Amino acid sequence: MQRRHLLQTAAATLAAPTLGALSSALAQAPGFPVKPIKLIIAFPAGGPTDITMRSLADSAGKVLGQPVIVENKPGAGGTLPAQQLQTSAPDGYTIAQIPLGVFRLPYTTKINWDPVKDIAYVLNVTGYAFGVVVPADSPLKSWTHFVGWAKANPGKLTYGSTGTLTSPHLTMELIAQKLGLQLVHVPYKGSADLAQAIVGGHVMAAADSTGFAPLVEAGKLRVLNTWGEQRLAKFPDAPTLKELGLDLVQNSPFGIGAPRGTPPAVVKRLHDAFKQAMEQDSYKTALARYDMVPMYMSSAGYSKFAQETFLREKALVEKLGLGK
Image (cartoon, rainbow, N blue to C red; front, side):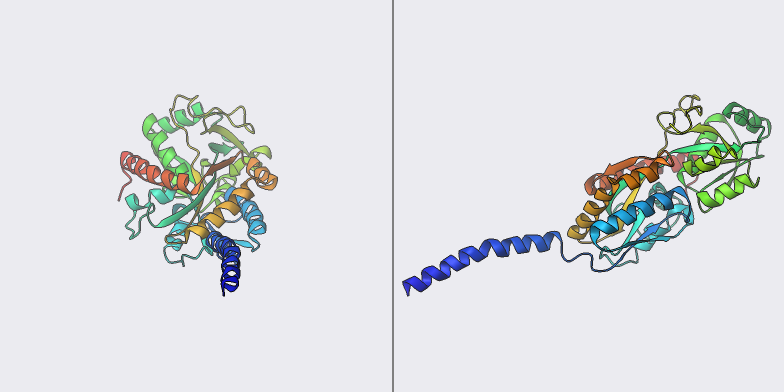
């Protein structure tokens, strides 16, 4: 009897670490994913967001062992993917790009959800490089010409952006307010649509992320300014807003969110896969095409950024008088 008891005890002792390790493994990776994941993008196909996020999704899918399928859902200032999260199952199989405009939404539109509390923030992946461009044959040869013409012709200078209440729109309105300009804003669904509009002469200027780069390089557009802390390597002759006397920097970080209530282990699995994907040369090359760079924030860091940005955007919307 004693010998049998000792054998049972020894067997239990040997089994305990195995069961503990299994439990830990299940907690960290609960069989996720077992099917393709949908990543909803806030802007149309063919623009810088679409091209860079498809590269990221492709690499993340290889890490996860299941494809990450990109779905474009443009419109409403880039907020439709975040809104779709509110009716999606919190299982990690529907995730979305979260542009900065999401944090302005409650101040401009009546919604029944909270951008801070009702999204599980996975990680931030990059941010945009912005600028103002005009057609290459435009008489507005520089930012000085742009400002001078706008002042001499109030309410006549038209500019396009990627949508109402997007970062390009609000930044341009802030610039106009600071300089006493009356500009006419024309919203489009994304960079691809906006590029067609300005090349086609439908607007006099465009405020956009550097999706305009190929058209500048092709000699069809000219850059008047850029909005980063420093000049862009691709457009070294274009001054920053700060150099032009406007104390503004806009790089509009964006990342990936999941529905509220998504299990922490699933969020971690997504975070780890996309972070690994961010480190791939293919993603960095896709970003460099638009003077964008990887801009990593962890799940906790991105959540904190969401809270802080939510408050900061309220002040901006109120300053511009664009609140609901």
